[in-house]
Image (cartoon, rainbow, N blue to C red; front, side, top):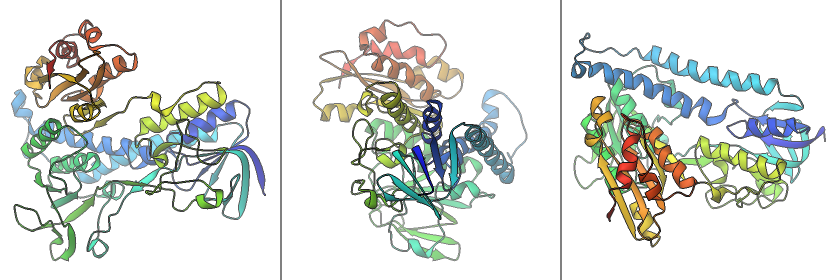
Length: 458
């Protein structure tokens, strides 16, 4: 064995460097291994570059709407896609450089560049070198899933990573998958000027959401000119002289769509298939996610799994919270658990969706008798003033206890305003306590106490 450490962290995504810093700061000798780019998905191909692209698309959208606000500018609005790409990549590169500088300055932390594989429960190989530790932490992330659809191997397709490299606007972008990643890219590229068609096997988009949320999002996107082909039972692909032919076999509409580009946005898979987990005895589930308990410990003592690879959350914030749980339990004598946190996330279309806890359907399925408070954004002064009165806000409450079960805010600032509900839930406060809370006017969030006082049976 080349070298022995106190701890090894595999993967420099959201959780890895933070944990390495905590461990090293407590006097431990730590190895941090990264086979590609420091910063992981969020910094390089996820949150940071995609939201930078969404911001450019929003600027184009707002410029086209300038007349609605009494502002006169030139027409048509031009899109300098190479400049957009340069801006997006520049923001991601700056964030990655910050991570690299941080890691380089960590005392007692050695950075290894290369692919790690287990050779035993406490040993890893990186190229020609082997290192070992009594504690090993996996933060290896995930990547786009490529479905085994007929013809997919015969075409050039894009994923959430490769689409960021486009320096031209597609003539017609076909997005396969009507969930969070697919819809964000669909709207952004539509606003850049592409014709966009979204194909989805399910009968509605973002099926994790309540039906009213799904319908409202689809209506917003259709208003911008995005076409949807739902109930696509047999999606297939073939090369075409004009790009790619996508067969949809839907109940309505033409059976085939021809596009210039295809984006596959049908989910993610964990980067666990080439780690040698079986050699270490680390258990995974049928989809390849590392099996962990409530403290993020794997089936092997001394090995933990954090972030996208453990199937306990697929977000930057859940990955960072994983780090906080592991660090608190190991270093602070705490007893934190994954199940202590509330599920929360955003869908960053415009206007954005902020979500926490349960929706109506889930709450009913779990046996709750529920009350619902709801208000359209057309009755929210701040949204009307901004000229962005699409969507609605909703809160779901247990009728017997008054406990807040969940909430959804689809509208301007919804991704920020949802934290008002999230914090009340985390603090164990009731809907009545929320109703009595004074909020600032004029904001979107000021109406949250109002809907908490307008609860109706659902």
